[in-house]
Image 1 (cartoon, helix red, strand yellow):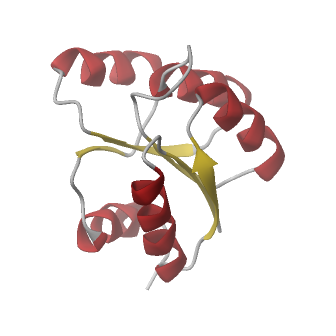
Image 2 (cartoon, rainbow, N blue to C red):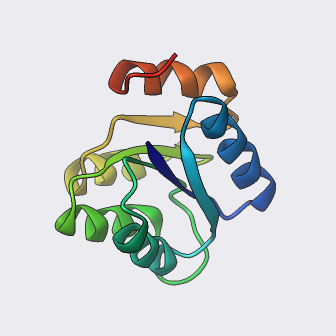
Length: 121
């Protein structure tokens, strides 16, 4: 299984990649722009995307997921520091997602969500 990590904090990006590797995912990360995430998703064909909402550049995470899901049916977990209910509402209206997690998250938080939807140990 493959996962894409889109997170503008490179320390968190590395941490999430480490979590996903422990769960058996091959990962692609170090993406801080929505546009880069869209392009990478087209080429990498992930089974899962961990997506931050607030990203660098003009395209936020919700817009990036919408563009990706317009082309492919890919599972998404939003991980954001924003508690803004408007973000969650907009994400629900524009995209399909497995869960919407508020930072900080730990390994067990992520594992619990992924375990509900993927066949992992």
